[in-house]
Length: 109
Image (cartoon, rainbow, N blue to C red; front, side):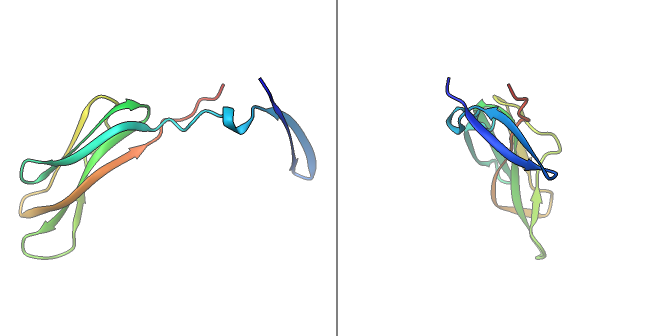
């Protein structure tokens, strides 16, 4: 395995360490192979099949009587392989939706 030498200035002093090449760095562990879409009249669903991290569905709703749009999402993040659901509150209509994702924390080598 090839390594590269990295020299950086830290607090006025030089620090030296060896790191693996950038190509060898581990990718951010994000959810992958995800799909999302409408469900029932007022909901949105999200599902990821692989990767790491977490995700949840989010649905955007418009109040029937007018007013600002509402983004609604579940409180709990879903893990890989489970389906997340979000539904508009009463007296609103679904106008769109999507999926929110977060990477899992990288623990390092």
